[in-house]
Length: 543
Ligand SMILES: Cc1cc2nc3c(=O)[nH]c(=O)nc-3n(C[C@H](O)[C@H](O)[C@H](O)COP(=O)(O)OP(=O)(O)OC[C@H]3O[C@@H](n4cnc5c(N)ncnc54)[C@H](O)[C@@H]3O)c2cc1C
Ligand SMILES: *[C@@H]1O[C@H](CO)[C@@H](O)[C@H](O)[C@H]1NC(C)=O
Ligand SMILES: *[C@@H]1O[C@H](CO)[C@@H](O)[C@H](O)[C@H]1NC(C)=O
Ligand SMILES: *[C@@H]1O[C@H](CO)[C@@H](O)[C@H](O)[C@H]1NC(C)=O
Ligand SMILES: *[C@@H]1O[C@H](CO)[C@@H](O)[C@H](O)[C@H]1NC(C)=O
Ligand SMILES: *[C@@H]1O[C@H](CO)[C@@H](O)[C@H](O)[C@H]1NC(C)=O
Ligand SMILES: *[C@@H]1O[C@H](CO)[C@@H](O)[C@H](O)[C@H]1NC(C)=O
Image (tube, rainbow, N blue to C red; front, side, top):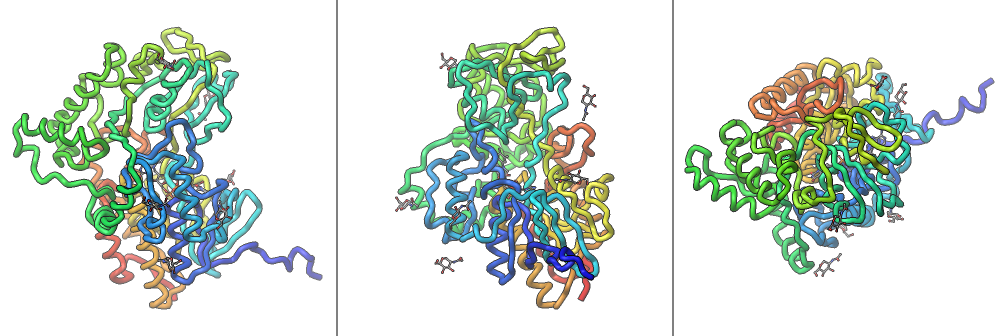
């Protein structure tokens, strides 16, 4: 006799495509898949659309990509939305995602508060199955992992951290009701989130101690309000701007490319160029700069000197100045995420913000009332903000427990090095696609235009599969091997190879050091993407 359980459907949800993640990548993938006539559902751990912009609600949270390029280029969506700032804040981005939901009618195919905890491939049925922490099980022919690169928070294992009696807060889980009034606040880390938090909190009634190991070579943002009339006028140029960002820029932006070489210019002419770009604000200072600075140490030192003088001129405290902008170059500029700032250096300079240099006095331990550094100094604190980043790019992919057709986990498969083709497919994982993942332009690119390219490639891939009547396609080992080598080769040309950073796994103890991201720019990557679909020679196909 069959038990009642055995006649229940094995899966709660059966669709053509399961998409993990409801950020830019997942939302666009859902829209495209439905347009192609597939049934598709998003599974999302969080409670709403937005990805990192849903989670990150810390004071001062803001994107460093310039309007209008931090959005999808779908005209139905752009027509009816105005960004109000050159660099939109978190709240505006959440408003944008609400608008995306409304315009594209995304909600009916998104399942929230559902974290994927296991993903397996059935070779006989050629389907993917997903188990989740909410108990929901799903199965699909195709899998799209749009799980982002910065969703696994990393907090170093500080000695005694469990003894601290106050809140310890990672920026991605900022409590809505946190009251900082009159409090002694410690901020550890001065990367992208750390500097935004500092420049915001320093204006409020609190006492701040900043613990800093590696300063950020931050560049002025040049923030300004965009009047709605201007925003509307800019829409006339969207086709040009977006086309340029997607197909004509290494990093998915529309900035001018420098047409002269470092060696063509005198020192005076070079300084004039730096000055001009600096004044404009934003990443143009790097993207439109003399191209040699990312490969040539002299050219890089030149840009650093310009930067260091600009920043030091904004500060009065000589000790702080030497910590956040040392005359002696400590890092090749532009080889670690160079964040944008508004008045960060003025805020650090305030007498009521104190700075602890972790290079000379590392943290010894947390106590119940603060942090003690190795020089024996006890810093009394009520709240500690750990702006210490993420186990980026691979962290949340590993946690999802994806296994290949032989049952081998992704973590195991990649223990001796990440192996992907184009950062989008992995040998042993047929019909599965990765967005914003390792060995693609990912965090080196402006997100949305790059993600559009990735989704468009997946769409073209599925169309080709359909017209060739294929059931399953898997990338070959050789193709992945070659792509991994190409990725390493281009990384080794750049000064980035000498800079430990989260772009190469250096921020996580025990993590393998390798370029997590394709450093060769979007056009070279896209060229290979387009070539890949000329025939199936890089793949193993089954009818
Ligand atoms: C503070 C901050 C600032 C940034 N600034 C910029 C910038 O200036 N310019 C820029 O281009 N990019 C920036 N980024 C990068 C940003 O992540 C990308 O631009 C873009 O959001 C990537 O979109 P995505 O959809 O690929 O991933 P995400 O936005 O990361 O979304 C992925 C989603 O997948 C979900 N997910 C992950 N694992 C699971 C699981 N197991 N089960 C279910 N759901 C899961 C997550 O909850 C998340 O909602 C920034 C990121 C952060 C954190
Ligand atoms: C998305 O839009 C629908 C209506 O189209 C609305 O009911 C819903 O609240 C919106 N947001 C989310 C997160 O579902
Ligand atoms: C844009 O919206 C209109 C009206 O709702 C709809 O008919 C059209 O299909 C949409 N276009 C795209 C590309 O989604
Ligand atoms: C955007 O701005 C234009 C010009 O002011 C206005 O006509 C339009 O209604 C605005 N759109 C939204 C969604 O606010
Ligand atoms: C992945 O699997 C391990 C071991 O089975 C489990 O401990 C872990 O919780 C799983 N990951 C998630 C995100 O559930
Ligand atoms: C964290 O540090 C403590 C000692 O300070 C050690 O016992 C523990 O194993 C460490 N944990 C990890 C995950 O490294
Ligand atoms: C520091 O002082 C400024 C100016 O006096 C004040 O506005 C600000 O709130 C103070 N900030 C901190 C962190 O104490």
